[in-house]
Length: 137
Image 1 (cartoon, helix red, strand yellow):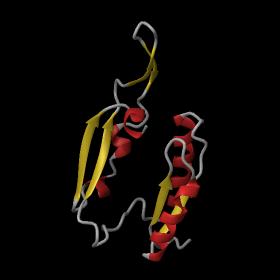
Image 2 (image 1 turned 30 degrees about the vertical axis):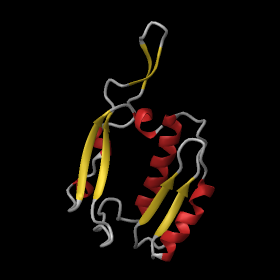
Image 3 (image 1 turned 120 degrees about the vertical axis):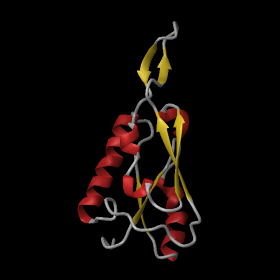
């Protein structure tokens, strides 16, 4: 991996695997882009999986400054729509009486907004009031 260039971090969803990203990683490599696939057990809690993702990003960030100082979008990208979820007061699981027994608040708004990305030309943030699992499945 060349630490002087950005890396696309590919993360599968539920019931997925990094194997599904090999073809995409090859296409990105053909276009001169690097990729890293995060393997995780989707049966683990979101706290465990998000911690693994955060650790992987921290590891990459220690070797490269592109995370803190992202470059410009490729010319082929006409615009970037970034969904930011307002997860406050969301509930993943309720009791039989309707009381929330498991919160669905995983990431704060600040954690989802990185000023160099949010302020970038051709980037639009759309804020959706919804829980994390409601959006990402």
